[in-house]
Every structure is written in C-alpha cells, then in structure tokens.
Figure 1 (cartoon, rainbow, N blue to C red):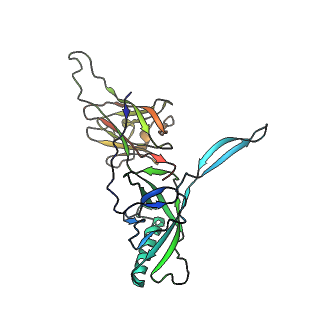
Figure 2 (cartoon, rainbow, N blue to C red):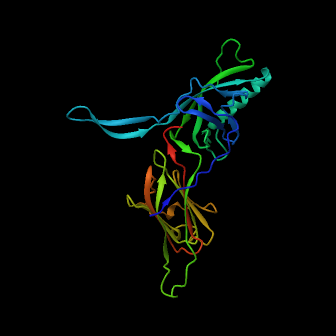
Figure 3 (spheres, helix red, strand yellow):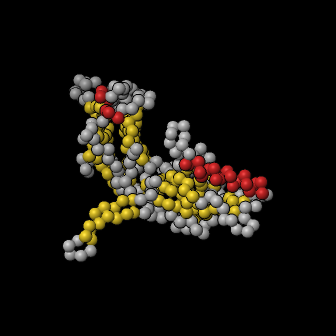
Length: 323
C-alpha cells in the first residue's frame, strides 16, 4: 500500500520575534477574534502583550479517570474522559495617554468577549489562540472568554496602563495543527469495455491507502467527493468500520460530473455543493463514521458509477496534547 503524506506548507515568517512562554518555550502567539481580526500577543513593542509569568493551561489536556474497585485491592481503570481545557492568560495593556489606553482596553475586551455573543446564525463563534514556532510550524486552539478582563485595581493602574488575567475556556482540549493533511484519489480516463478486452466496471476502488496521522490523538476527517458517482463507500480496513452514502436515497440523486458532496464526521454533516442536507443517504444504522487514530491506518475509498473526473479528498488537521 502506498503511504500518503501531505506536503508541509510553511506559513509566512512571524512579524515579531518569538518570546519564551511557560510550558511551551519560544513561540509567537496571536489571538484571532471571531471576526478574523488578528491580535499579536507577544509583540513587546506593541501597546499590549502577554505577561509570561502566570500563563498556564498550555500543556497536556486534563482528564477524568473512572475506575472500578478490584477484589484484590486497588482499582482498575474503566474509562478515560478528556475534559475542557482552561487557559490562564495575563495581558498588559497600555497607551500613550489615558484616552489611548482606554481605547486599547475596550478594543481588546470586545475582541475576547464577543466569543460569547450569538451570531446571525444563532451560534457563538470562538476565538483562536495560535502558536507559531521559530521553524514556521504552528498549532491552534479554539477559545471562549470566561472571566478576568477587569483590571488589577492597584494604585496608578487604569490611567495609562493596566493588566488583566484572562481565563479562556476550550471545549476541545486538544491543539490542532495549522496545516491540514490531505489524501486525494481520482479516477483516470476509462477505456472501451470491449477493446481490447474487458477493462472497466461500474464500480471503482479509488484507493487502498495508508493514512499517516502524526498527531497525539484521533482526528475526525472531512471527505469531499466529486462526481460522477452513485454511491460512495469509505472503509477503515483495520477495524472493518465503514459507512456508505447512496446518492439515490437522497433528494439530490446521483452526483453528476463536477458536482460535489461533503461529509463531515465531527460535527456530523452531509451536504451537497448546493447546500442540500443529504444525511438520510447514509446507511443507518450500520454506518460508522470512523476516526483516524495516531500512526498508520489502512483505508479504502470506493465509488460506484465512477468515471473520468470522479475523485475523493480526505482532509484532516492533526491534533496534539500540547502547544
């Protein structure tokens, strides 16, 4: 089986030099608010920057262990449950004068607290804490503001400077690689069925492939299928878990050339390129929308009714315990 690995794309060089951050070492940190605005957190020449002393919560994810008493003494571990992560982030904010300081204070407070506001779609959008290493690699984590943007209240603070000790809440405790990994499989041009001898079937296996997950924990991938196709089968060969999307069972019908359907395993969504919900096309209750564990995993993609241009793209971001 071929081993598929994605090319590593190096992000742009950081605009500010890395600084020493507790628990993770030298890095350049950026906060990205729900509007996409980037706020540098480690630029010591800016009017706000992270106070390294007091930063915490960047290490391994917290866990709750469930055990059962053992008749001979002690206990046996029964279940391990990852818990939401809490990050403590001290921040110094200043300004050339009181009005400049106040403007900076208000802007940053809004950038963090807007993670708690409902958007037009009725959902809250988290911010992102991004950690970029000197070699250009990076990881990120989704964060919600919890508390702490209230200043210290000490003598002389609140005039041209003050510090806030933020608590950021992460529903997913794992860090995600900035760069996605992608496996692409596409059919070639089919030949004549009878010349020189039978060569083409109505079902094509696009890939018996070994997927490499370099992360620390399972990832839940996203699949994009490009037609033509009438049915798609995704199999994890080491466990025999699989799921099948039969297009004839959906409101869309068979995928025509160039049409797409996207299957997200977490959160679970099956959507056509024109926005139709195709979730009922999965082979419930047998369908298992499987994850990819750390290491090497053999998988197979099969398209029924495939032809020239039919393709499957598997995309995932490796996830890690630490920043």
